[in-house]
Image 1 (cartoon, rainbow, N blue to C red):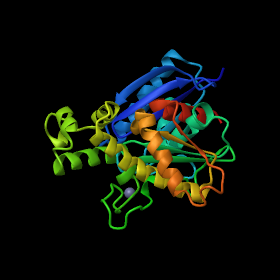
Image 2 (image 1 turned 90 degrees about the horizontal axis):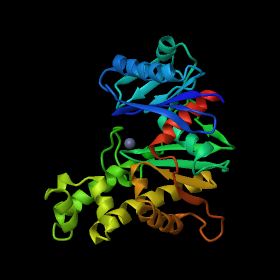
Image 3 (image 1 turned 90 degrees about the vertical axis):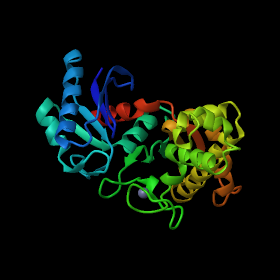
Image 4 (image 1 turned 135 degrees about the vertical axis):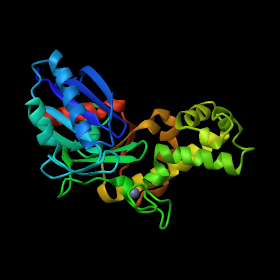
Length: 314
Ligand SMILES: [Zn+2]
């Protein structure tokens, strides 16, 4: 049994695990990300690897799944807005620290690979994984392999423009898909409704402590599960954007399956049903072509760890 370590490096936390070749996590550790300090972030990655290796000395390699643009050699993070990394040679830094081979991959790609190998994408040679969280991450599997693009920075589907002159995005552009179909978009929708039409949003305001800005994503999901019409409307609005975006990706890529992950996917069928409806109403050539499956991810937040660990094994 070959063991590897997968590390998921996000803007708020570094999550790492020892993973076997069946994709099972044997041991896991979590640390806050010192996201404003690039050196400290590299050090924390080294420390969590040391800690896990202390308990599993037979670990053979390390995979890092990190936010940001990773270069084609999978060694340098070119740009990571949430980690203060600019041309960060993270592969070399971590290899020097831990003395094991290190592979670096974008976190959306690592998550897609985890789901493709061990989760909801198993058995699909051609699939797209979309993570609806703070923003939107994506990864594309073509002929059973991860598609990275020519420069290693492919599949940033969250940043295709869906609304000309729309909401400003963290990437600097306006109208990006992730401003309309992410977990943050759901919260934006709920707060907006509570501000403009408080009489309609009674339950949402109650959960948010009486203030529109107090409403969070978990509360919107909770209210929707209770059948609250305002929360359900927020889900329908976001699912409409998500389904339209998937239909656009479907028109270009024609995958066999879409796998939907991220915090928003915790809502399960509350999200999936309206996404499927929106997708089926928007797909080009609908009624005259096979439909891809649209499924909820199976590995949850661990997909990034499992995917990165497996990529280190290849
Ligand atoms: Zn953007």
